[in-house]
Length: 460
Image (cartoon, rainbow, N blue to C red; front, side, top):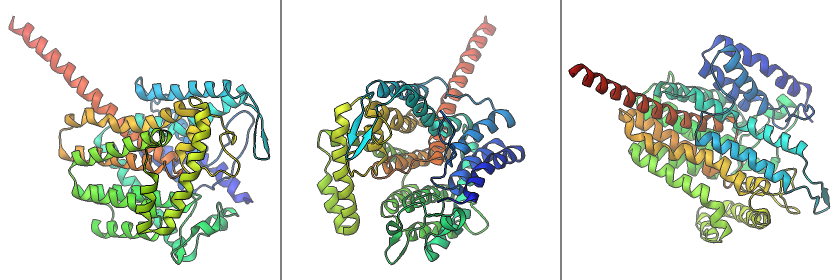
């Protein structure tokens, strides 16, 4: 059970956010409000109010970030992204949620549990909950515009990673105790965090897998800035980079170690265009995975056999996940477009929902899946249109690196459920960079056209 301090931390976070927006510029204030809340607030502790989503570590920081941007920093942030495919995808999800409610008014029985049908009261809760989930994306697309904005964001990520590494190292050595010591309870199953004769750190994120994935992004950012010869902190860049790579290894996340290796080697060895092409390939695999499973062409057995050669225990875990995914996908296919709705209606008796994608498909159908995963995919895909307009290799390298990070976040949602406000803010930042580059190009093109007209008029 959570202690009183857990609830106090949630209550105090709005005051911390107000202080941040009064003292700092809008990008650092937004970053520390959203990411600080994600990294530090308690897992699974909620303050419930009638008819609105629960106030917790994911909702309170993003609400305060929006209010801080709009009313303290006086930024002209809107409640939806600018007109375009990103806005349309968000609206599509909301329309799909209406379809989910309309097609799930029937009660069902899952095992020994009787689950009632959905009502329009559930619709409001679903839409508000998913809107708050996507609000960091909406803020990112409006706040992160220029290359300097992206560099500032990257430097903030390195600082956050280095500060958090102290807590991570403590738990690697002493076992994952900080959440219990601070908030009164351990947020997950203890046995899952004993690995290779040591421990996986949990800190305040709920699971060791999410800690490892956070480190992957920090390593990717640090490698990018180091490659561009930008100073990371007081120690030499190479020292910081080696430290972060070792931190990822010691965190003992097998999948995250693979993704981190891909990120590090790509940034260090590939050209910006090749980095971007790799990100597109990963994104395409991620968004088509459910359909490949549905028509039974994804090579599950071959993947398991290859993993078994490296790590037999991990292969067993993967086989367990695949078997549950296939069973859940067969149920999801019965309500293909709109899904079964929330409140565990999408599950089977004793089923395990590990991957974020299968939860989306089962609950909100393939419309819900394509809406949410489509936001990540479109942010990556749009880079191909703006890449040629970037003036320097440095700009291209930064954008390609961010694109690869978002693709790795995307593919991690296949075996895991690691999506969080920080990752959505990062995805929104990529979309914001694309939008700003496109607008700048259009503005420059219009200026050139006006100059040509004026020159023509002058000559006459």
